[in-house]
Length: 339
Image 1: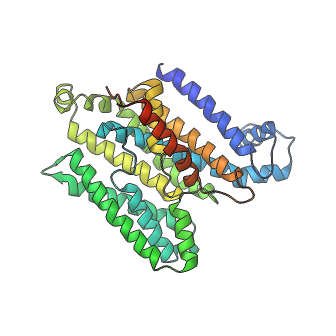
Image 2 (image 1 turned 90 degrees about the vertical axis):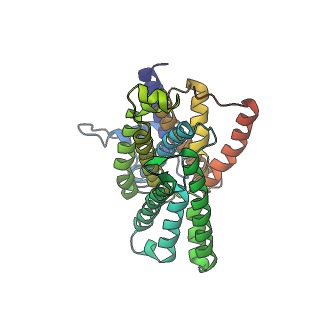
Image 3 (image 1 turned 135 degrees about the vertical axis):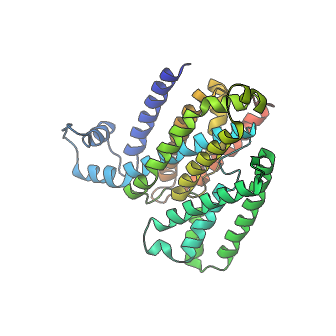
């Protein structure tokens, strides 16, 4: 499949899932009314014929939450595909170099200090700073004389993740009951109460990061052939890896900052996409982005409806779905093809 048909198919699937997710909830809204309410927000479009209460529910509650789910899912899917390519390992995921643990510690510190009561965007901002600081630290630890070994990067990421995880647990253990509950809910991963402020916060960084990674998809393909081949074809392997790692960390950090730690999206989705369309990253990256968005929107919709009027954390849903399915994939395929 070429790129254009792939984008058309994925866009149609994503649009369908978005309509269903926006219409579904404790108050069921007809699909056609949902479509009209959303289209009516576009310039030069004037439609009518729906309940005013439905418009309030869609525009103020469901639509921004669904857009956050789509952006976070896309960011995790793309990041996972890049990480699996860089490490040549289908077990790699966006948090493999400690970005997720750094984001978690940033959020835990912010919640413990009471920042969440000052402004609703302070916790996401702290999580993002923690994620990016961790990425920079791991990269420094793994770099010697201007060269970064991927195996060293992986080991440094594991060590730093363990230390940061222990730090988060320490803060959790000395927190009050209310703060402990807030921290636990954040660490389980969720999208409740996400609004237009969160959409505005993550939209531009995710779009910029995704576009830059797409532009390096061909370079990532060549890196899989080895550094000597890359040099022969005019690709600076070390510099290309730096760019890929930097913008993958950006996407992961931004995603973690508004959603908490959501497991398996960046692990499962790229793996499935690779099975369906092959290892060419020019197709794999957009497919993983769309797939991540679709998967997380579907998981969040299930989280909202499964135990209504209460709500599950979406991180629980993705883990329950992702873990058994990934074990099934491991049983079916003993070896992942990257070339």
